[in-house]
Image (cartoon, rainbow, N blue to C red):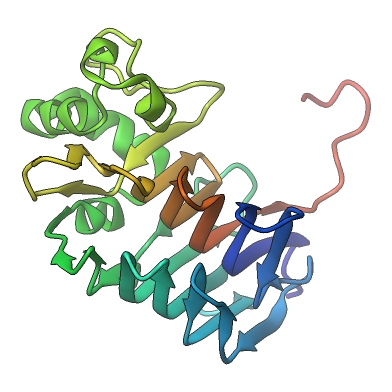
Length: 285
């Protein structure tokens, strides 16, 4: 029996960004090792061995891959996408050995079925700022278990300790505790605490880590954001969840002085959906 039509989607990027200063003209860092999965599945991959803008940003390798196929024995459409960046170095101040963003999805072939989507394989290794090892408290495993939006909504409602941890990590209702220049990293800062999962247009945004290092002079910690004086802001690990989609970003940095620019490292995006024709007029939405 021929499986129903399905529209695959998966994409990944190793590094992207732009440099505004000290160079004379803005330099765009085009998406490195970009991969996009064809809509009917198959496979795609890309690799860049090394990259270096002397004194500003470098890495030792970027690799991405995506695969999508129908699995007859489970009657599901399976998609995997992964981005890995190694030897990342930003101004010799922010460094990471490995940054991996991974998304795996399993969509039932029956119309209307909710997919299972996990981020298993996502990781950060050897993150340092000014030679200081950054200790991270990860939340990756729980979101491999909560692999559907309905599971996450129910768990958030029923588990007080999970809810309290999320509220603390995401600074829910704590806009006044955040400096103005880091507020945009915490979208729920103006929301009231609630037993209902925080969402906007069917989407929720999750911090994947909390930085365990304490703040000290010149080095301020806010959840998964570090504000480093005379350098910039470092945003570590974010997951965007929609009913049929996950987007993972492992590292983002906004630099201010003496180098100005933005850099995003190791991102993956995966989902898919039915490609069946719509019902005839009057046959429903």
